[in-house]
Figure 1 (tube, rainbow, N blue to C red):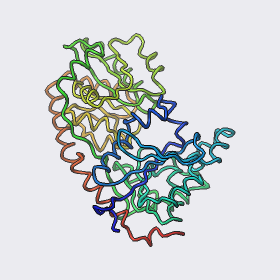
Figure 2: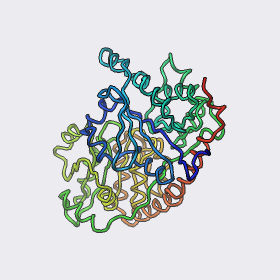
Figure 3: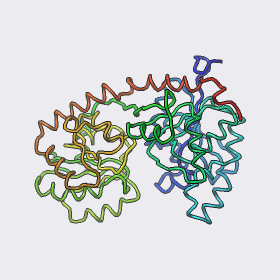
Figure 4: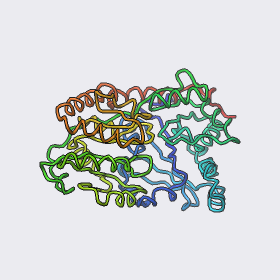
Length: 418
């Protein structure tokens, strides 16, 4: 039957990039039960909703130390079918005894007989790999070639350049893929130039952005919970607290901003490995609020909509949903001039682009917005208009659907078993 007909939706197997479940999610306070019942805060969940609404059928593949054979579950927030697969014994043995082997951890975890059996017994029509710059993509491409399953590679920011013994494998995998999706201009140029990709198989495709209305009644409650007086203002950081996100730079910038603007607060919403170090760094700084992880999407939208500006001082970003959502909430964005942020933020139009790792430039750009509310409002309105025009779901999802249908229906001779 033709892929994607009304009688039989295209079945997509989404291969998640973390090496094994237990080495990532529990470290962030997410048990397997929590993951299946409530976890709803990453790219995978968002894309699953988009694809299910578009008529695709999604199965997630997750590798696990804790299962001896494949297990089937249902992810309650999205409805996706979840298959926990046993990680390869090679991964379990080598990563414990030789920590430096992490360079090849995704290769080793994916070399699982359970995964090969899964693909043979119940093959999807398309394998969608979260990061094409990873060992997981290399191994999935090998297995898919043997079984005649087309592969789509997405880039989610996880640069893991192939090491010397396996560079040729990465190049082969990228060239063989039915579709490669790069979310920003720099990454698209890099992957095409480095690996000689061209034509319709390598696409520049930014992530679709949901367009929402900022909930009016949430703003005052958000301020009250954060301990911010109603008449005061705040700059917002929202995201994972790790070295790449640059919150240390934002704290340094806030030292000057707090002196210059006595009514200005800094709100840091998120969690991550650097949380406690950042709390210590903020000691002695006035009007800094750490909210922890904010799970409610209406609350996130209210935080964005109430900010004077949203800061995204990352060292690198493939595509920054926080910046896109801030623009959707009609707030100006101050961001590092890197990766996907350069594609999203128009300097002087929807916000400011600054050199990475430059707290003085970050402070100056934020001060200009705080000091000129009229300019800030104009930039915010321009940002929302840009999202609606170029990045909104109703603009990009039809194109994504067409690309995936074409990849699933591509002539099998391009992917026939080896």
